[in-house]
Image (cartoon, rainbow, N blue to C red; front, side):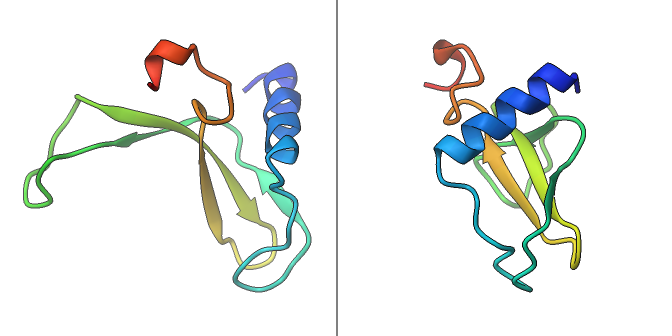
Length: 85
């Protein structure tokens, strides 16, 4: 992930009010995980599907307990609109 991308992601998270302590341990130090995640959307929980619909996300992590929080790039305005509508 590029520095400019990180700065834009952090800016968008702050605009959305993502500035509170960790919901699990109360720690104030949260970090942005370097890289992007792609969460697969499946119709059936009993099948394992490769490919298909997905939700691109970024992840923040608590520096104390490791709690992970995912944030959809489309909702943050970081994807072309047609990709997440």
